[in-house]
Structures are given as structure tokens and as C-alpha cells.
Image (cartoon, rainbow, N blue to C red):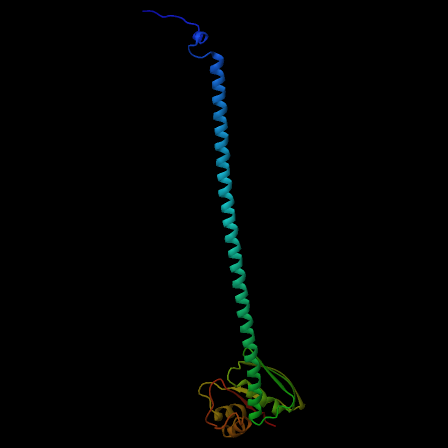
Length: 218
């Protein structure tokens, strides 16, 4: 038994094995092929990533466009509903304005060139009337009408006079009690009753919240 030394790849000279140059060449070729395969694999992976990223971007863009379209559609719908609501309110206010004018005229009150406009619970009255009594009767008739919460008036009077006192009926009030408080004499309740016709047609029929005209003493 022993150890024998040989010249590496010496057999290549007689057709046994491969020479060092051949092994180096094969190794270089193998490395080149491996590099080519790695580059191809990397390129393929990058292409897949790019394709996935593009698909994701397209999907997100489509989703964003859809959301934007839906948002615009919702806004258009909301705007349309607001316009419809505003139109209905204008029609209702115009109708109420006409009803108030007819109501006041129906009470036998000459409104002259006064104009009554209703908007969102408020009655706006402008123009000129003959006298102070007519002005006050218009204000009371409109203010006590259903749906009116406030009267904003700019009525001028052809024949000015002292203004009457406006009394808001409280629970338990009677015309007698109102007259007693205003004049110191409850039996003068008929003067208040007469001053509020035809809004009042029974001296015993007044209700809380109603506003009455109480003429001041001469």
C-alpha cells in the first residue's frame, strides 16, 4: 500500500478525462448559462411584478373612477332634490301668501296697496293703508293665522294715530281680566271685543297665545 503522485489531467493527453483548459471552458460556459438563466428568471419575475403592479394600478384607477362617478351622481341627485325642495317651498310660500291676503280681505279689512309675503313661517307686510286701526287689524289677522310664527311689517299709515296695545293671551285670561288690567274696569271688555272683530266672534272664546288689540284710552 502506498501513495502515488500523478500529474493532474495528464491522462487527457491520451484521451482519458479532460484537460484543465477544457474544464475551465466548461465551467465558464456553465456559469454563463447559469447567469443567462438567472437574468431570464429575474426578467420574468420583474415582468410578472410589473404586470401585477399595472393590473393593481388599473384596478385602483377603475375603482377610483367608479367612486368618483358615484360621488358625482350622488351630488347631482342631492342637488336635484334640493332644487325640487326649494321649488316646492317657493310654491307653498306663494300659495300661503295668497291665502293670507284672501283671509285678511275676507275679514272685511281693506288692505289698500299692502302686500303680504310669506316665507318659512314669517309674514312680511309692506305698503300703505288708510289708518292706524287698519294697520293693526292686518297685523293681528296675519299674525294669528295658522302657520305664521312672526310678522315683519313695514306698513305706512295715511292717517297716523296712537298705537293700540297688543296683548298676548295667557292661560286663564278672560276679556274681563284684560280690560281690568288695561283700563282698570273689567266691564269695558266689550271695547276689546269690538276692536278685535271679526277675528273674535264670541267674547268668551279666546285662547292662550292669541294676540289681541287693546285700544288705548283717548
